[in-house]
Image 1 (tube, one colour):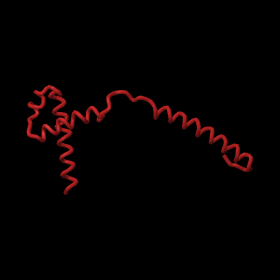
Image 2 (cartoon, rainbow, N blue to C red; image 1 turned 90 degrees about the horizontal axis):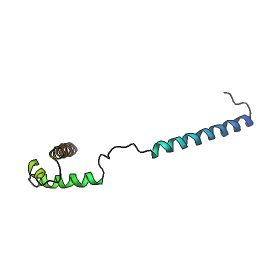
Image 3 (cartoon, one colour; image 1 turned 90 degrees about the vertical axis):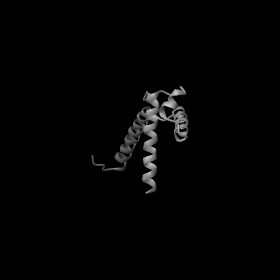
Image 4 (cartoon, rainbow, N blue to C red; image 1 turned 180 degrees about the vertical axis):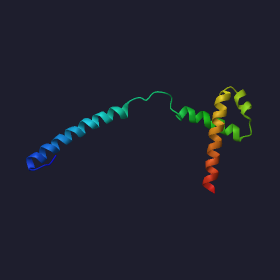
Length: 95
């Protein structure tokens, strides 16, 4: 599309501004939608993980932590994998 006059340029600008407004409205819908499912590292998860990390660093075994009844064995091993990954990343950063 070739613009040959000021009038056609202003019309094209108005058209593009309307299109941008529609796209912004559509984008807002996508930004605000609920994607569902649990949040991976929400505050409750982090609190539970921190409790696990303190106990684990204090010398408790996985089974001793599970025996306290606050988290399941599967969750404890998931936390341990996350803990090990964090420790590995810390070591790599210090090298």
